[in-house]
Image (cartoon, rainbow, N blue to C red; front, top):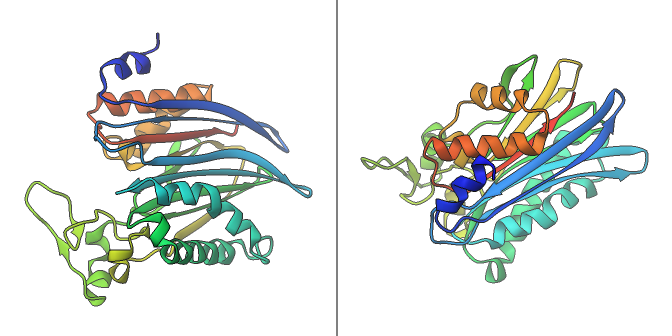
Length: 279
């Protein structure tokens, strides 16, 4: 029995899942693995993920995402099913990937809000990564789920954590406020601990859902990409995560070990982690 399973035995209401897969680049095989573990909260698991390679015409796309829901499971489940397909439906995806991702995020959020009678009042953060032909990586996010890339062993944060204090002026200009209660994290209108999210209809007039987007070329020094929900990043520094992932060649075992370390560091939240190994 590995360390994670031992921890799971005493971790209340834990549900875990893990798997792996692979694609190809011009310089060899690209492998990925993932692991999800439910936290101590009484609500059902609210993290959803995507990890797969697909072939579209002559292109191979690696699609990776973490959706960290709040209040209900319905919004992250909707994102799991629709967000990537909405991005790839954009006519200009191959010539203007940045704009296509931004438009698809906006359209998806509008669809969630328009179906709130079915999807409920909850919301979700998102971090998505699209790897095109093993050569170019596009990363986008809303909220505090994060993507970190390792280049030559150095951690590069590819996303921006959208925290209420960092976007306080925008929230206040929209008529909202940021609470800073002792012993608690800053929250939009005293409720939500992120300043950008999908859904959250009751707060949407004070929230943003437009993503920050970054792209980068994958070169010979690029070795590992980590996507994870804030249940990992609350208790682990970027470089620490990269160091762990780099020394474990099997990406699924690396994802499991990252979650193991997060649990040992005291994380009580749902934790989802995807590790992509390039070389």
